[in-house]
Length: 114
Image (tube, rainbow, N blue to C red):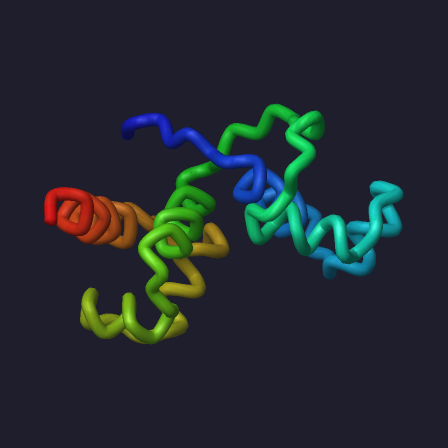
């Protein structure tokens, strides 16, 4: 599987998802404001001094690719002809997400070629 280069906002989102906590709790734990966390996760941060190393796991790659393609869970489920719960299980690491990744790569490559 090809390496995926994460943006700062994607790294923050994955970090928070790994800890399984809200923006409020994450902000308190890391001594940042909720507003700052929100701006960083939305990609609107001007300060790029914050950085950390994070290597995404396969199920996290599926989540990031879906976010990049701007598809909702229901939309991806319809494309793959599976249930919403299947998509959620794949993105949570409870099932192999390779089908999600393959479909999302095709979708993203198709949009880039247009």
